[in-house]
Amino acid sequence: MAESSKRVTISRSRFVQVPSEFLDLLVKNKEYAWVFMVLWDKAGASREAWISVAGLIDACKMNVHTIKAALKWLVDNGYVKRISRPGQVTHYELSLERRWAIDDEPESPIDTNGGEPGASKSPGAPSNLGLPEAPPTWGSQEPHEPKKAITSEPPLVPPGKRQRSKSPELPALPRYAEPHREALGAWWRSCQRKHPSKGAQLTSADLRGLEAANELGVLALFCEQAAQSTWRSLGFAGHIQLLQKLQRDQQFHSTAHKTQIKELSDEDFY
Image 1: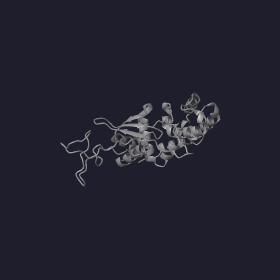
Image 2 (image 1 turned 180 degrees about the vertical axis):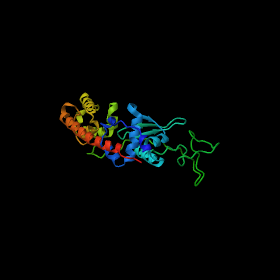
Image 3 (image 1 turned 45 degrees about the vertical axis):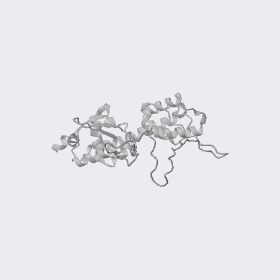
Image 4 (image 1 turned 90 degrees about the horizontal axis):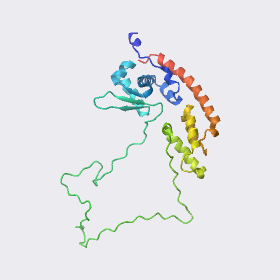
């Protein structure tokens, strides 16, 4: 009972707009949910929490293995970004969306030494950069002929076939829409194929539609709907009924999951 009285108090009002997908993941593991809520409470409006692992152990009343497992899951899934600098307390940046999830591995460094990646030349080794190659010393001793420069030529296209042009890339997005670039990119490519006269830039109507969805708190759902469509425009006027429906659904799920969060915060997380 003494330990329970020391538990930090979490402000539940900050979780009203939590995406349902994120809550569904957290409900499956209550320890991870509690660690994230403590970080969120520490961060406040800045979405940045400065707290050590020892501080999390004290605030969450969990052992070090559970804390580290929760942090690893949150970092791997892109909801938390861990920044650690020498001489400073660990800094955590928080997001309710998978902002930092990275699926692709970094490419291997380019080999500039002519050998295996990571190999380095021994000190004092001569460099032939910029000098002509020496004549070969094996086989016939014929005069060395300099290599002819290879000129690149455009690929031949068989008669009657046209080269398929690449789909134009999605233009710049407002800052608040950047986390949804993948979904909006899928819509943009479908739109360009279906409506070639669309142009290479987002129109003012597109931007107003994104802004309206963001203000209503349904930007993620709206972008997912767009990714599965061939809409010519994201304009607010053409999708007002959809935005209202998404908002009603969002409010319904928020109310249901708010009840789940209350139950989680009232239970024992040891």
